Length: 353
Image: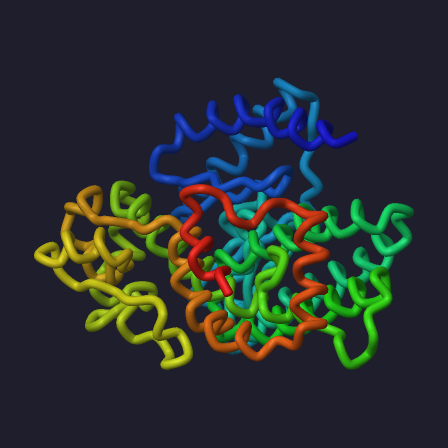
């Protein structure tokens, strides 16, 4: 039932809000039935106990303590002895948490992996392998044009959600694997000749933009929006936006992007706001410490995507080298799909041959 998860989330929401109002120093990011409590250990432990009580009273729900987890960023990269000492301390002083699993490498927060690079890599690997397995099941769909729409509008956006929270240097290799699996599936259902496999879809044709390129714009636009939101919350402002925080570079910020991501530009002062709005620049993280984050200009992700397509892939040069057969394939499949040239769509100009 497509509505099942939405109905479940709506039912759960009032109980979470009730507890959140009682513990203003904690934050409660939730994704479906994945509920997290973020805060100092003493407050978070009390909030956990209260949430368990409220869920039982309001909805007769009981959490599975053995499936619940405790994580601290200070444990990342630490020794096993350090984790063991922390574990003994928590079990001794917070008996409610003694059956919770302790995670030293990372945790899933709001559906996004938070932790070490190895933890995020493992998450992306398992996620892409799972999506590719689901793709094999989708391939049995009886209508080929309907299957293409399912891949485009349900399968591909699933990965894009995770790209908003995983750095591009980690996600891009897995995006490439994901893109190749989609191309192989499309090649089978449309019976492409082997030498044409991937063209023109590998170049972003028919709305199948390579996720390897989406990774940049999804991550940096989401990061900017998160930092703007976090700047107004004391819990995050004191920790994430502190000068010593690893989340906010102290110098150039987003200006320190890899050369392969030169399509995304950052501005570092409020004096550049007019140019930022004109050219769709992203604010450098350091600006969010100013206390005036609400004034910052944040470009929409769809606009950043239009900018990135100028270089990834380079439509103006690559499209010029397509064979007539490849152009015919693109025209044929596009004519049976969602109209690409929408009025006011910033991608329109890039699609003109």
